[in-house]
Length: 54
Image (cartoon, rainbow, N blue to C red):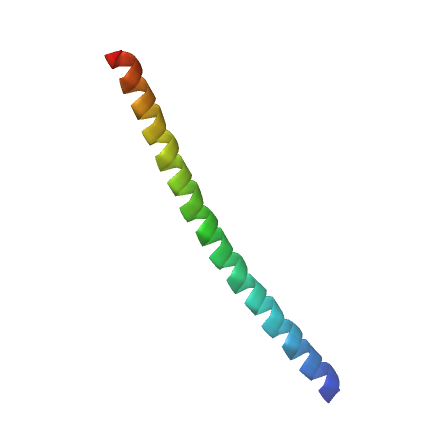
C-alpha cells in the first residue's frame, strides 16, 4: 500500500510538472504569434506605402 501511495505521488508530481511546462510553452507560443503578427503587419505597411509612393 505504501509503495502504491509513493507511486501515485510521483505521478501527481509528474502531471503537475508537465502542466506547468505546457503553460509555459503556451505563453512562449503566444509571444511568438504576437511577434509574427507585428512583423507581418509591419511588412504589409511597408509594402503598401512603397506601392503608394512609387
